[in-house]
Image (cartoon, rainbow, N blue to C red; front, side, top):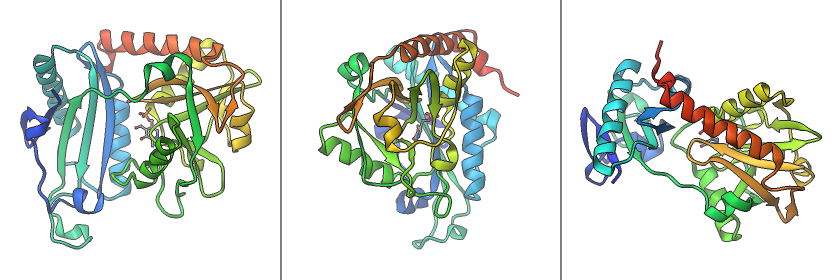
Length: 298
Ligand SMILES: Cc1ncc(COP(=O)(O)O)c(C=O)c1O
């Protein structure tokens, strides 16, 4: 059973509700974060809260609780989720909305922003895709650039991503890759993208529309530790079609190998680099959450 923290109370998520005049609901005016927990502890919550604060700052949205208060609420929520489900692992969705205001988009009519958090389970890939690699398409829906809305803002506006996700489902594919308006690869609909090409691990830069993914950052750190050359690099569809390996990363998804893009098959799936990084990533999450490193807070 998914559990929700809202207004200082914890209750089953199906019983939690938001006001119909909340601008988060009416206009998608708000920001959110996703976090994983294992062994009852969050993986890199500091990075998530940092990103939440950056997203909120970009929208001039105030977060109604301080970091320590949010951390305390999250711990309470994870514990309630554990009691309700007998599980010490899962996914957290943390949402900050502009709050209740008058009809009309002006945020000035919303005196107090809203905050709620949901703890539940999120499974974003089939067992088959995990084992032998996902089949991807490149979506026709593009990601807007900083000339409209900077994609580093993790806002409640996910319609471009949803349109791309629907394209994938309609095409019978597992997921879609989104290009930016200049035709360069940005990311998946809720994941960061990696390719392996000539022994180098590459991921698109945030300037091309990629989110500052927390899993992406962890993968780059692991590559460095493994001595694998890794960096951000601009990519066109051609780079995906000719890659040796490809995989997607995200908090909800974890790591997922890619078998093909638009019918062009990777040389291997799951590839050697993916397999090595995936094993290290699982170890890293396990160690950090087990040792409570993720809880350490400054
Ligand atoms: C659009 C988008 N890109 C990338 C990601 C992956 O980021 P992270 O690894 O921080 O979950 C997400 C996940 O929330 C996302 O929504």
